[in-house]
Length: 123
Image 1 (cartoon, rainbow, N blue to C red):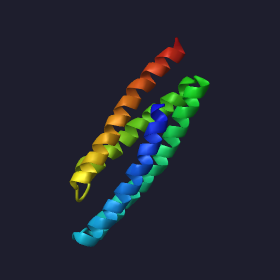
Image 2 (image 1 turned 60 degrees about the horizontal axis):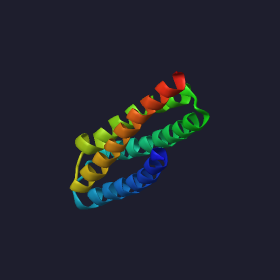
Image 3 (image 1 turned 90 degrees about the vertical axis):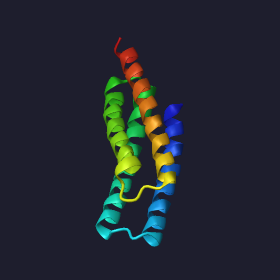
Image 4 (image 1 turned 120 degrees about the horizontal axis):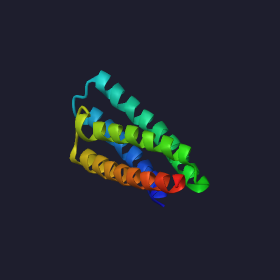
């Protein structure tokens, strides 16, 4: 259930962050190399999230440890990218902070539940 919620929230997060980056590049002086970096990381995060959610759902439905473990590793990568957009992005607005903090909380909750599921599937 949490994976479906995370997938829906990430779609909102991706669109909102993309629009915020476009807004910041138009309103503020946003250096071009950093704009390219932020956009590249956002699209990389989108690919990572799609793979993570697919493997997490597959592992949960099949009750398999390996897809869930890979999804857990990808969750750590997604949390790192979420932290980048929360703290280290070139220009961080309050909306960026709120969106990224919520996504980071979802990643943390999913990681805990994935660990519990892996432990249950192993035993």
